[in-house]
Image (cartoon, rainbow, N blue to C red; front, side, top):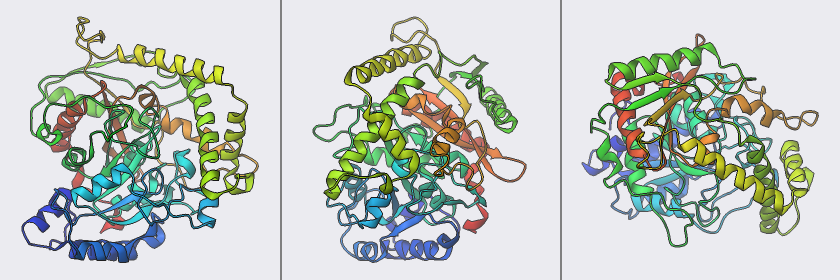
Length: 483
């Protein structure tokens, strides 16, 4: 078995060709977790003995047979395993879920072996992963800094080489932000591409996929796990061909607008501005029609409505968790900011919720008009194929910089705004978006840029992302902790 870092597709090939057994892959991943995670705190719920037993048994003959994977300790549930969502009350009760979520069923059918669950911000509400319940996850590139959030544990585990791939979720940037901060690929699929059932609904802003090193992992896992289950509320359009088939398919010249403008009150770090311009120049050299753009539609018109719906959603989540525990949660059960957000949600009326949903719907239609063929035949008249932005407005924060305190309960949420300013709007619109590695700051911290396509066009992101991967070669650069 090779000692050099492999992606998940390459690991699966080792098993398929008899060069390694599933148990050997799982044992190797467990050894790396045990050796490296002590200083990073990414894998908070090891599942080692179960994983060894499953790897030694009869695994489905799927495309990732025997490949180790971790689950983010948020939306995906795995039967008989801890499910704490970064919440102290669930941790203290040692709560375990009783069933596999739909996506976990797909992972198992694909042949993946789950070796553990990774750290997350409480309820996924921050752009850092420093929950009071489990402590901070540190960035493998620089341990004094955050791994991003809320899928920081997932991204740190992959960046540190513990596993080649990890489940992650994204309700406002939680795949893309930690991907950018850990030198990884982070594809947020379209709303309805991945089943969120039975715990969540596809009408929500949150979606699931993976963080990984390569576009082929992002595409091939999408082929293995996307598609509806009975009862799913939203189903994304079929691309007409396997997503992996677009990896080597020249996309032809695309109309790409780029912007580094966020909100007027947020200054984008010059390193991020330079990264966008560098990638824009590379896209131009690859034959695309690249133009500098003002931000397409008012990117943040929906922020007050989005915030209101988030408050109601948090209140609803705490009520649901209380039902699971058989008692109402109190302020002592969650972090100060989470409790305050839920308390504000309790005072919001049904009329206000409906008004907020109408605002979000209007913004979604306005935003999507920037994309399209330009002649109105598709209903999208803007004449653009892709938008290029920074993934975040700032490089990774130091540990503690975004952590909430009793005196500053909203410190995490307010401090997260510059990190989600380019990402969260595309959760509202439901569009697919891709963060790719785009270099480093002067002190060695990873940064990323984001490509956004029209709804349902993951195929285009995969094709252009693959072009950029071949030109940049980011997967060859690994965090010092992974060596």
